[in-house]
Image 1 (cartoon, rainbow, N blue to C red):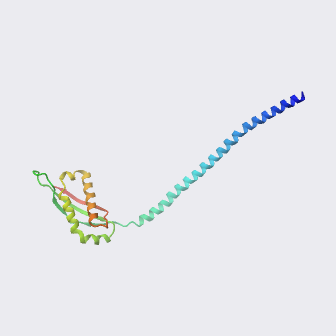
Image 2 (cartoon, rainbow, N blue to C red):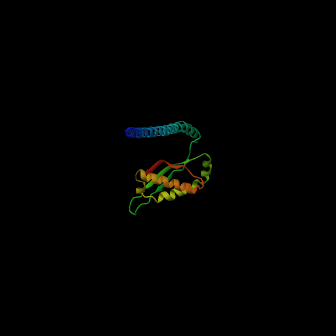
Image 3 (spheres, rainbow, N blue to C red):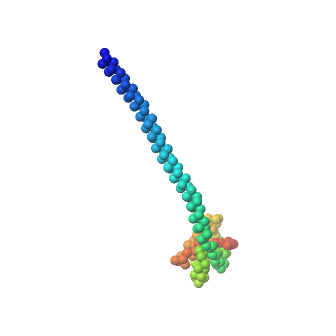
Length: 173
């Protein structure tokens, strides 16, 4: 019987050891998985904080340096342009008077624009005479006009470019 008791106690010991092993293994995995996740989360948080700090501090100094290097634009006034608008036969003639300034990126462009000013005026008058009064309705019409005049000036002075055509006065009568 001693052998039977020994066998029973040995089986109980194995079963108890198996239960302890089964109970002990998952908490070790969970603990190590939690530890790994916390470590990864900490590294990500440090990366985000470091990147944010670099963006705020580093970006601010680079934009401040860039802001100090910006040159003020140069404006060149064009002579006033007065044209009659295109009309459909029996309509009364309407006139367009425009005062325009060209925005140049730097002072050197002003010397290059002055000799070709007659060509620019011809380009403006030719284009403006083809407009109808309805082409100038609302802000969208004026925006299209500004963009088209800018495109035509840039084509006339290529390879140089102006920044914008600015309206100082527009009268449709």
